[in-house]
Image (tube, rainbow, N blue to C red; front, side, top):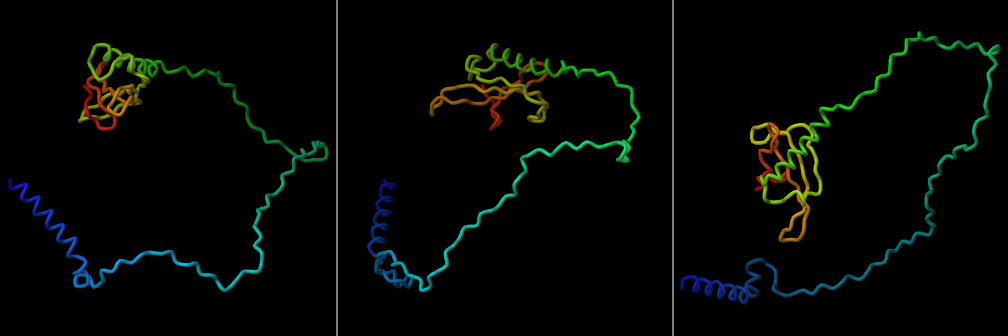
Length: 190
């Protein structure tokens, strides 16, 4: 009952303010309560007219000679020129740089660990068939004071706003996923 009475008092005060304010505006603000209509101002003409035409400035780029320069042969008898002599080194055997198998297996391991985690039902928010992208993270990240190896997935899920592609991050320690989190908020995904 008190709430209803309070609402009625507020409505009556607003109506009184709306009706009384125009008559008190001069006393409160020093401006009259007269409503001014805004009309567009007529365009004023300038007295001075420019009589000279304005010519645009066009930048001139230097032309590049497209004809090749003639081949000039030097006569060694006429030109006194000595080429610098560099001591020759024995050619070092060229050994192809092998791919680092450790980095490749580490990347593959991260993806395999994430797939095993999802297959085991560790996370119920999405399944392996909803995953669009699998990505092994680079290096390690510190989360809640612990250092983890990371992997990222992008999965498709139904939301109240329609079908969306959402990211998820796997925190991996000792070869297994410890938890799945949202990369943006850091909240755990169940």
